Each structure stands twice: as C-alpha cells, then as structure tokens.
Image 1 (spheres, rainbow, N blue to C red):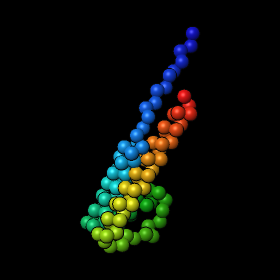
Image 2 (image 1 turned 90 degrees about the horizontal axis):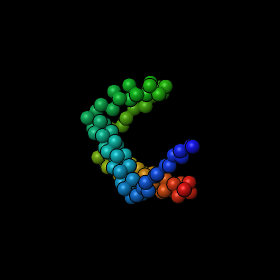
Image 3 (image 1 turned 90 degrees about the vertical axis):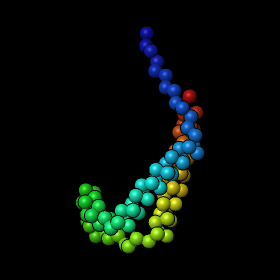
Image 4 (image 1 turned 135 degrees about the horizontal axis):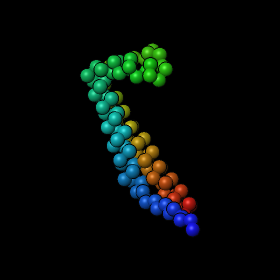
Length: 98
C-alpha cells in the first residue's frame, strides 16, 4: 500500500513578510551607505566586479546624507512590496493546490 505524502503549508501574513523583507533590504542598503561614508566602496567594487565578469569602469560618487536616506527608504518600500506580493502569491497558490 502506498503512503501519500501530505504537504501542509502555512498561510503567510503579507504584512509580516513585507515588513521582514523591507527591514532586511533597508538594512543592507544602510550598510552600503555606511561603507560609502567611510570610503571603502571602491575596494569592494574592485573585488566584487571581476567576480561577476564586469570591468571596473564604475566609480562611486561622494557620500550625501539625503541620497543615503532616500536609498534606505526606497529599499524598504521595494522590499516591503516584494515581500507582500510574495506572501499573497504563496497564499493564492496554496489555496489553488489544495
């Protein structure tokens, strides 16, 4: 007799997933802004770009606090939207598969 594998999937809360991904994304971009502030960005570019087969033709402009704030806010908003959409799709697919 074959045993059927029953998959139980938990419904995701879109707001929680959105907040989590938004905070994570904003945090990564805040770290990048700090790296630019201390002046270590070109070192990272010179190391990371060749790993992706990209020529080192880019340079980072000087740090600007307003630009950094906008970067972190936009990263949060895009992360939140991505997380919310992911959770919504997850819940929709799980409902259709049942």
